[in-house]
Every structure is written in C-alpha cells, then in structure tokens.
Image 1 (cartoon, helix red, strand yellow):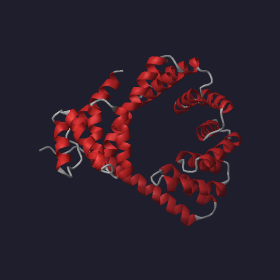
Image 2 (image 1 turned 90 degrees about the vertical axis):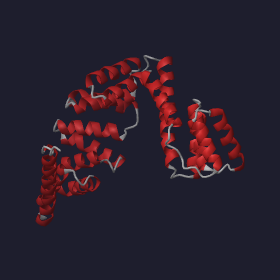
Image 3 (image 1 turned 180 degrees about the horizontal axis):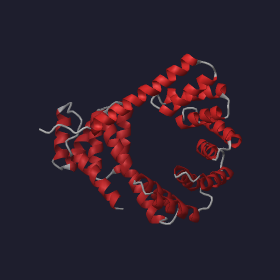
Image 4 (image 1 turned 135 degrees about the horizontal axis):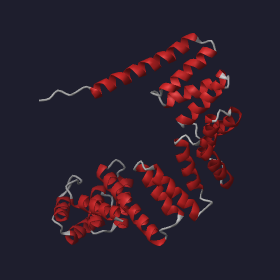
Length: 304
C-alpha cells in the first residue's frame, strides 16, 4: 500500500517538474508556466483550447497529460499520451510519462486486487514475485504454497514453485510440480524446458531429450534451451545433432563460455579440428577478457 502512494507521489511530482517538452508556441510556454506554477485549471484550459484547433499537436497532448497527472486523472492522462505517441512515436517525453502513468495504473489495480481478495492465488503470486525480486527465496516459496492452497490448479503457482526448486537444484521436488502443471494446461516452453532440465540433472537422457526438443521448437531463441539441448545431445554421443543447437546458442549469446566449450568438443568429435580450435580460442579470449575486467575492477583506485 505504501508503495502505491509513493508511486503516485512520484508521478505527480514528475508532472510538475521541469522534465518537459520544448515550447513550440507562446501557448505552449504559457501552458507549461501555468503547470509549473501549480495553476492547473488555467493550464488545462489553455491546453484544451489549443487542441481544439490543433488536435495533432503531440507536444501539447503531452502537456495536457501532465496537467491530468497533476490532477490525479491517471486513465485520462494515459489516453492522451497514447494519442501523442501515435502522432509522434519517438517523442521521449510522451514515452517517459506513459511509463510512469502505466506503472501507476498498475499499482492502482494491485491495490484493488489486494483489497478485494487479500488471500487469493493472484495476490500470493504477486507477493512471491516481489519476494524473488528481493532475493528472499524462503518467503517466495511460502507465497507460492499459499497460492496453491487458495487454488490447487494454479498453473502459474506450480511453475513458479517448480522454477524456484530447480534453481535450488531440488529437481526431485521440481519435477512433479512441472508434471502437474503439464496435466492442467497445454505444454508450453517453461514446462517443457523445466521437465527436460530436471531429467538432464538426473542424468536420464532418454526422458530429457524429447522435452528439450519440444522446448526448443516452442522457443527457438531461448539461449538456455538451445544450449541444454545441444549439450544433452553431445553427452548422448550425437555430436552431429548437437552442433546446430550449440551454434545457435553462441549466436544468441556470443559471450556464453560454456557453449563455446561444448561447441569445440562437438567439432572435435566430428573430426573438424580447425573449427574446434576456433571455438576453443574464442573461449580462451572470453576467459582472458573476463579476468582482465575482474582485475581492473578489483584494483585500488588512485586517491586524489
């Protein structure tokens, strides 16, 4: 609740602050001056009158939105900013205030949700995400369990708890949670990858590969998935099938050292010595650069 009111204060302060569009006409200047002076009724009148004859003026739409923000009219301000961005998609001021307004509106919705259903699964899911953001895994687990107590069929809670367990290397606990989620909804990337990754940790390749292949097909640009599939295929002795997956991983994440190592091993197994050397050299270059960066960061800075 405190977060909501703090956010609203930030929005209102920013609406009255000097971050503003450049004045284009005397009317823009007068409107902005009235806004900064806190004369909101006058600023609103000036903006609305000008927009009657100049409805395509994105700068004035932003000024009007700032007046509305200062008056606490978040939804109306949001609509004006969306209109401004349709007219001028690169307007930085419109983008800035739209971000603030959207977040403030979200906080309003959260507030209403907490008031109407304080012990509902969605509320506990929000609290779990907040706990994870604050690096409080035990608190997050409690909230996921509370969400499941409120709704035993909450796929989001099952996946969230499974992800948390897997991040703690507790795949024996994570796997049945993923499997339960898979029974409740269509197999998606998160579930398929989670099940495949857990089987991989348990060294059950025959079970891992079908799920990892499905996950890669569902999200071909997911780096962790492509690497996991390539590495699992490599471990299973299929270097030829592993190669395109590992090449995709380094394409998507050019600084992923473990992917270059696995790629080098795949090339070796295929008898492509030059390509293997190139991959291993890239790994060495990345490792050297990382060490040099760590040394620079750890070196004491000269004092003035």
